[in-house]
Amino acid sequence: MRQCIILMAIVAFCGRMPANAQQADVTRIKALMEQQTKTWNDGNLEGFMDTYWASDSLMFIGKKGITYGWQATLDNYKKSYPDKTAMGRLSFNLIEFKKLAADVYFVVGKWHLARTIGDLSGHFTIVLRNINGQWKIVADHSS
Image (cartoon, rainbow, N blue to C red; front, side):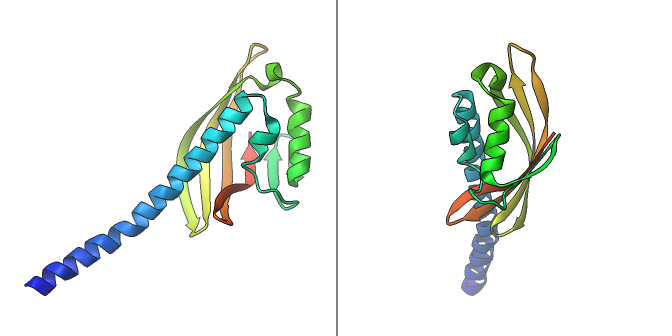
């Protein structure tokens, strides 16, 4: 009987580990998205881009097509949002998190820019990868 109870405790404990690990990942990814809104709302595009993979392989897909690379993505943001009036106030509604691999998540959400010159909003999908212990956006499709 005692062995059965110990075995049940081990199974119960091990069964929770992946859920706890996944919850920790989601919590860290939510913090990354909060960092994005804070830096955006501070007018800090470089800080906003800290959440992206600093690589020429970063992929951003928007209304103008595909952009490759961290610097090219930053340059596009600077052209589209040259000042705080154009940037407005960013908010996200995170809808779904899908774990694709131990170090990869797919996230679906909505974005909204409240602006005095007219609000903008849409949806996004991002792929995040844990690189050297930090979650980074490696692909972003925003529309």
